[in-house]
Length: 161
Image 1 (cartoon, rainbow, N blue to C red):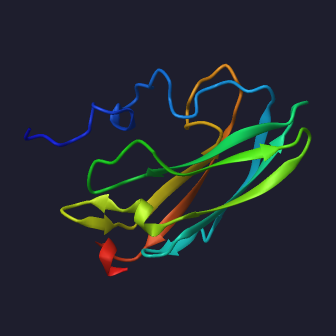
Image 2: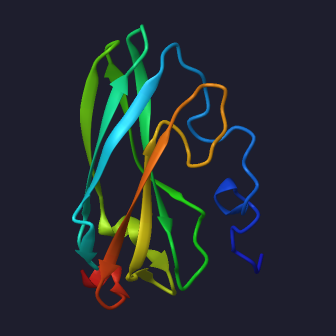
């Protein structure tokens, strides 16, 4: 095999075509609402980690669990990258009518791209938080919040951080 690219071979690289059953697909006995997505800091140095918080509210009549998913999208990259990449998830039990605030860390290494070695690049990124992939259409309503952040500094090998 001479071509190791994953473009067109896995759902992460299909372009605009959505997979039949994407990660997180399913139904629920209740409804959830996401709000207050906060990225800190919104501008970070090349080797820094990103702190993320989001509030999840169970707006339904039943106690239930939700799988909160965080996806990262590179707005520009020197090499082909996935449309978005799962960088964190957590299964959370929320009582009916209650809410919980969740905190996550997105590590610098999760922004690395392969260019003969793992490399961190500056640029603009979008982080998505919700109960499904960005743009996913399901029968169970679930929203996906998004926020942008920037990475500054010269590109450098990941092992140099």
